[in-house]
Amino acid sequence: MNSGDIGANGDGGGSVTVTIGLNARVSSSSKIKGDYIWLKTNSRVGDVYYNEIKKGMNVKILGEEYTPIDLPVSSLPYFPSFSPGTTDITVNVGETLVLEKGDYRDVEVKTNGRLIFSGGIYNLKSLVASSNTRLYFDAPSEVRIEERMSIGTNCKVRPKPGSGIDASDIVFYVYGTDGSKKAVEFGVNNKVEVNIYAPNGTIWLKTNCDATGAYIGKYIVVDTNVKLTLDSAFTNYASADKIDLYFYNDGTYAYFKETLAADPDPSSFTYTVYLDKPAGEDYQQDFRLVYSDGIAELQSWDGSEWNYVSDITVTVDGRNIVFIVSLSSISNPSILQDTNVWFVEYYGSNSYEFEVDRAPNTESYLIKYYEIPNLPGVTALVFIPAVLATVYLVYRWRFR
View (cartoon, rainbow, N blue to C red):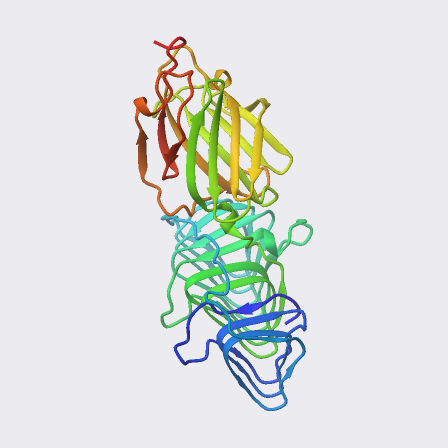
């Protein structure tokens, strides 16, 4: 293992949760964390964190030992909701196919076939590739698989040469469980440069795989002579987890505040507040407030695209983000002022394609007109315990 860490979140209840195999070599800068760790004979590792440990003969710990530890050892990424399509895709023997983003059912690549993902989000039921196949990616991609992913021997699953992307730009989300086959299998002699998250099943990297990326599963099996190098797409998603949401105004400015589970990370996420005016209707004057790396602005929707309106003030205090915008700048004098408000996070800086929504409560909540009475005028702090809230903006002398 060239780089990265190894860990297991579960309490073993007396059973081993992390096993480092015979003659395994783990980078001295890597951390191994688990409730019960077994270091087999002739293994060599860096730092080890555990509650219980078993060591074989001639084990070398090049770092430090830390015990006890708290579980879980790491937070998990978000897993998107999706539904596969109904169209099957088959790449026949020796053929090449470019696949556009979209919804598909079963995708199969036969021997010596080549499948090129053009980029974007793919929702599949299954993905099966036979021996000597190539799965290339021409642009950043998410491949979401409902059941299983099976890759044969002597295959490559990686960025297309010359594409300019790397393993951290490609993420597979596999929802399936183990059956006669594991949820995710890579055959012997594979070259793999992707990230995989399989929360309900096993990720199996077979002998002589060369794998770059990050691999998170219910279980992970790594055979002999496998090389692992870290290039993770899985940032700290707690920085996008909404805990509390608030709205208030002082008669001149509106304040939209969200409290996150961790400090905001605008270099990894785009934080937005959408204002649907009027609530639930199609009107070409909706707004959104945007905060990301190098950007803090108000944008308006003209019916086809979002356009810059003005810069806004965004303050960050610990885990809190506050969007501050003048009430007059988000007013529509000719229409009613029932306004739906969404706080939405997207993965990526200044990006609006991959939505991250791990808020614990996404039900709809209504803020009554008398809680924000007769604006403009000072209102008390209003707590919004959900991603979706309806705010009634009643401007006494602007709107009738």
